[in-house]
Amino acid sequence: MAAKTYLVVSNGQWPKEEIWRPLVEDSVHLIACDGAANQCLAQNISMDTVIGDMDSLSKEVQIQLQQQPRLQFIHQENQENNDLVKAINWSVEQGATQIEVIGIEGGDLAHQFAAILALCEVPSNTRLHTTDSIIQLIDNTEYNNSSIEKNT
Picture 1 (tube, rainbow, N blue to C red):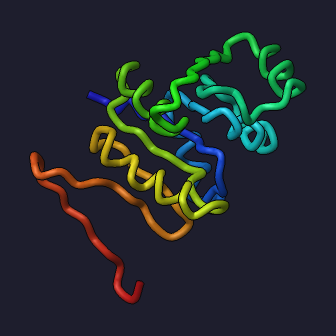
Picture 2 (cartoon, rainbow, N blue to C red):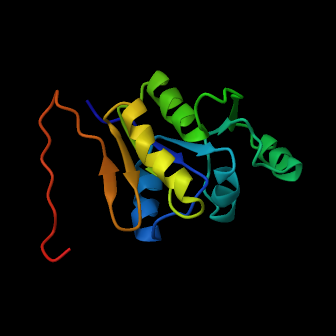
């Protein structure tokens, strides 16, 4: 069975294009955590879903996005979870078998820690891509083989 890969774009600094471009191309569904829609528009990347409380989108951008007929808005005001956790959980509900995440770097260090700690709340098929690494929670129910390149 082929992986049903969802890409979640958070509203932070993206890794280098050689990291994020293949993730965009290989995903079957791209979700922007509300403010990340601005970055997707700037990079001319087509989104399938925008999720969150929409507090990071200007009215002008919301109007521009609403003109895209296949774009789905999932308005969630639940303040129990941040937009990243909301997007990952929604991906799981939609049947994602692999979830890739970009846009977690930069800005407030607390937001970066929150993104990493979010891995404790979501399935282990979720990976965070940064400029220098891939971060994934390893659970003890399955075998995982990881490698680290020499001299890194």
